[in-house]
Amino acid sequence: MRYETGNTDAVVLAGGINRIELYDGFTPGYKAILSVGGKPLISYTLDALNETGRIGRICIVGPVEVRDACPDADRYEYVESGSTMKESVAAGLRHFFGSPLILFIMADLPLVTPAAINDFLDAVGQIETSYKENVFWALLPEESFNGPYRQVEKGYNRFRDVSVCHGNLLLMTPSLAGNDRFVSVLDRIYAARKDSVRAAMAAGPLIGASYFLGVRTFRLFTLGRMAKVVSLFLGAGIVPVLLYHPEAAVDVDEPADYAFVKKYLGHEDDFEIAAKGYMPGEDLFWYCYYRTLRRRMGGAGLRGGEGYVRVLLARGKKEVEDAIKMYEMRLEEGKCAPSLPSVEKFIEYFSE
View (tube, rainbow, N blue to C red):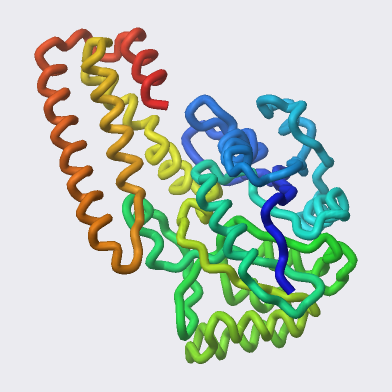
């Protein structure tokens, strides 16, 4: 059996609270409304979903504080989040019970792109499964973390055939809400998600022993073999989906995550430019433009034998670097006092 993923309803899980100090003066609160670049994290996730062109209804499972912080709040449906991950997932499954598949995505996923979501949906649409109830889980191969994503630290599960870390995109069949065995282990797995052995043991002794011996100790199991063991135990298809989009794994749980997201989105870069004291004008516009283009090209990852595309990308990067140097030289000749408000507003506007 294959699923049609052309028009899919989505659940945004937005009830998580971050109690870890992400930066000096940080106050614990809901991850979804943590502000980066003047926007709550959930705004980036919602923008990506809306730009895919294939997401139907969107339901935000979260508290009223998140609802109030969402831009264009009337566009979305809302369900109060539960006190646990299990309760929140079950609420999302019940809300879209008539849908064939439901996309689940975390609210604190600010770097996720429409391309990542579409590629995940496309991949799932090509998979045959014999189970009536299924979880399709995006897993990110280690080699996909290239460009700026090399800075991201992730714990990899090293199978015989591939090393992967978990992503924050899942497709589930709504009938899983009635699968007591599956629902009962959700909270235990989520609580242990930072430690793969503990997470496997949380799913059950058989799964824990299989993972510890077959993956962690002797590396005997392939990813597919381990998925079959988990599926048999839970009575539902647990289907790994390899996704070469590292941005789907970057949530904001730790100080390093927060620092990376701020840097990647370019806001630290903006302050650096403002401190140089460049005058607002056409030269500064093009300087910001090419720096932003360089940052986005740096995240481009190409696999396989696409040699001619690699040549074009390398040539394009060189031309961008040359343009940056040219405009920087021109801007150096007409500096103003550093950090003038007019400069900061100019850079903030044109670097978005």
